[in-house]
Length: 291
Image (cartoon, rainbow, N blue to C red; front, side, top):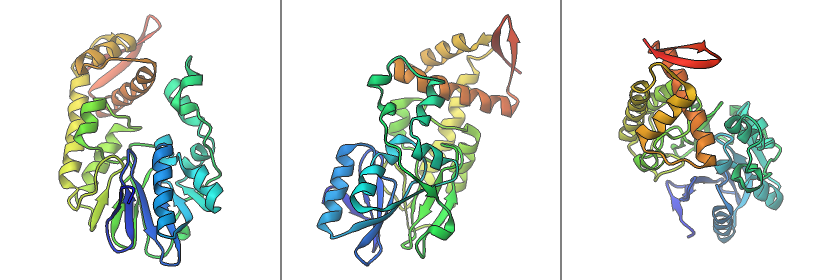
């Protein structure tokens, strides 16, 4: 019903752009893991909950990105539930207008039309082990966001946020957004050996074998690093950025430009950490050189 898929005895997920986890606590209430990306997914999930006679007791946000917190306010207002998010992420859940500031480094020219500038913020408490219902567990998943976590239900089903994405997402976005590339690669490699009954990434279907997808993600990010490195030498950032967009065949608009500027800078930081690049101010411009 409404794309609500049963993963195990009490664990479900709504298949949508940013999958939403549901755990039936057995007393007429449930836990949500993330809260949807747009009005339709929130509406579909609520209809499914009403049909099952479930009320939302709490929402556990894996991280603060807007496509994971869109339904927080609706479910809080409808059910009076508490909302939890990992440390640091709570500030962005409460004040979601903080998120576009690190993409745009200020207010963009298209603020009135911009998806990220909808006011969705809700009070959030810190997500720690001691606030979880019995049998739940948390796992730090650094790399995609400031302090993202994975969440395991008592059925041994893992919800992995955006720690790994499917090949179709890489093909569509070419350079998906991550906060720290080297940590993202390390997280993908760690998840290869994570025991669990089932794994639910946010943007693709659940799977019992996460290993292949983890290896794909690590390899894709390593390949992206190599490709970006190949066009870096002797370029200031604007020229380097244009070269990366040509290399990856990316057609820009204002929103893509903001996210990609951010993402390319994150890749450059990873290459600096690797010792593959140096950077120096030359004539008032930051110029990168391959070592």
